[in-house]
Image 1: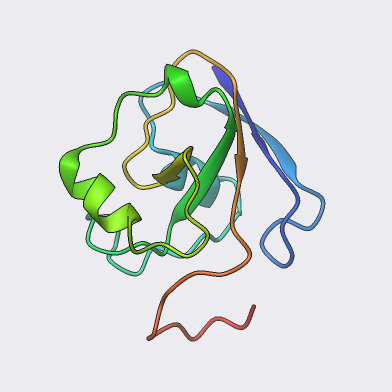
Image 2 (image 1 turned 90 degrees about the vertical axis):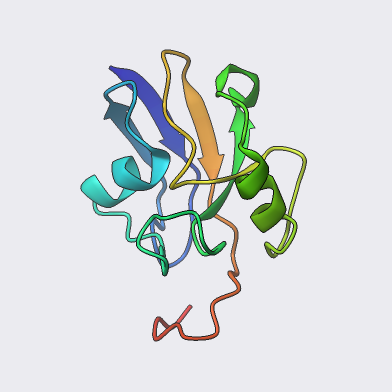
Length: 113
């Protein structure tokens, strides 16, 4: 199991969280399985940016993003050099620290943030 630390985010995880995740699982699936209801408007098909996260520690240990993911990330709110789509980034064996951005670009969202 790999440790994934989620930094505090109101309202999704106000106190943050430390998760133990099986390698190979996407960050999105790991977050959802642990009660952190990150948006995923395209149902995890790499067709939007609502599951955008910033990897604060361990970014270099992740497999590289695909060209499709990189193209989508260009449209994400708050893009940083260590941004990834949680539906595409798979946990490896290196511990990660992730931040969920305060905002997301989801014109159809019914969530109140």
